Amino acid sequence: MAEIHNYTLNFGPQHPAAHGVLRLILEIDGEVIKRADPHIGLLHRGTEKLAESKPYNHSIGYMDRLDYVSMMCNEHAFVMAIEKMLEIEVPQRAQYIRVMFDEITRILNHLMWLGTHGLDVGAMSIFLYAFREREKLIDCYEAVSGSRMHATYYRPGGVYRDLPDKMPQYLESDFRTNKELAQMNKNRQGSLLDFIADFTEEFPKSIQQYDDLLTDNRIWKQRLVNIGIVTAKRAKQLGFTGPMLRGSGVAWDLRKKQPYSVYNQLDFDIPVGVTGDSYDRYLVRMEEMRQSNRIIKQCVAWLKDNPGEVMSDDHKVAPPSRVAMKDDMESLIHHFKLFTEGYCLPKGEVYCAIEHPKGEFGIYLISDGANKPYRVKIRAPGFAHLAAMDEMTKGHMLSDVVTIIGTQDIVFGEIDR
Amino acid sequence: MGKKFKKLIKNFSLSELRAGLGITAKELVNKKITVQFPEERTPISPRFRGLHALRRYPNGEERCIACKLCEAVCPANAITIESEMREDGTRRTTQYDIDLFKCIFCGFCEESCPVDAIVETQIFDYAFIDSREGSIINKARLLEVGDKNEDMINKTKLEDAKYK
Image (cartoon, rainbow over all chains, first blue to last red; front, side, top):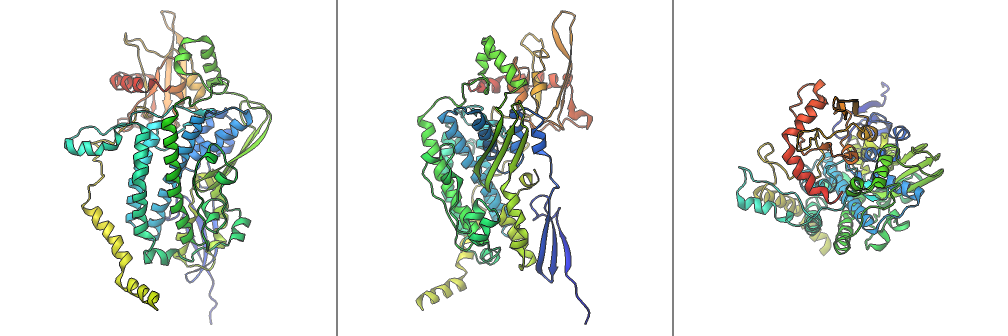
């Protein structure tokens, strides 16, 4: 009988289910995966090296572009690392704004994940519904920072600007009657906080809708249940974090275990899975969205009651207000110094991690006392998850690879950096 | 036995698939959220960071004094400025280029400008930049964008002034 060899298949980098630029070399026997070898680096932009050549603040915008579906969380880790080194106080209000936008980002990320994961597995409509909600949150991003994705909103010492007390509205056009227009602008009458509060009221209904569409659906379950099982022990050994770890039943969340910002003042729960398969991770992420919604609600209530400063008044780090800059010589000098030279960090090193939607996102920063970092290392959660691709796919069918890529919630911006 | 029977009924009646299709059917008749783009636009925040513009004072004098702060602060090195003394003794730019290939639209240039000369407008559909060379916009074109949209720029910047 003729000897039959394993077949090698090149999956990606242009495969629509490869989530960007993942190139997988699959060794398959019939339709069963024998070995999966992810090749990375196609989206490498040298963010870490680039950060070494410019003042600290200049890199904030590049942090957005790491994991480009959870922008503000990346920024948060970076500015927190700088703040830790400088030992500066961040105003409470800025902390709450950050936490609120971190959680908005978490919902954004999970909605994106839900939509694309559904699309990969074969559920088309969930993608459209997820993006419908995403649009509202992206509007919040735009209202506050001026950009729909790459916000550059967090700064060492606080956030760039306070929340606006007016939401932009739909304008008249030939396509809409006045009545329709009034309906569309209904939730845009008040401030941004009112808009977000309205969203938090409506969002549980949307999650219920996703729930009804997917959770019990037999096709969805056939594709997800018992696919890519990772035991709790293995998940820890592989360096999993975030929903990937919690899906395996380990209640590890940096927001609870080493609370940063104001998370210790907020009330929320950590969902964990049982079996550690793709379906459990799906349930964990769904519940995380509900919990994020809860956190946002608490933040909105606090922010409404507590107006105040959103930026540190240490003008060696944070620029003075524009009015002060135009009136006052000293402020003008600070302004010029900050925007040309930046600020110097004391000699030393720092590691600062946050609970990013995908897991533990850390910034390791070494400073030699200059106005530029000596070295920045970015700990991207997706990297460790992708490394487990071989173990998770082994023995599964070809179509399950797509499910596993989806359940890992991979974004190449952060893996290739 | 009862539980098993219930499960069997549930399985054969395709209840969860029906529920899912019910949502689809409901959305079929629900109001659509589509925005008909060129004729109709989504709301744009006054903070929006779109195409750049150079502004003038109301008397027609250009604001930029070539302090080169924006050039220094630009993380992507997208701005190139050359300056010279003008006949009347003031310092002005002779060259002010923004390379839109490099620009990451972070808004630092606007933030740094001490005289509110370089701003980012609400224009995001700048297909009028038709050539590759045109994407490196020079001073004349930046001023032109500013002149054309001064009303809009003034309005949005005023709206947002109190937060800066």
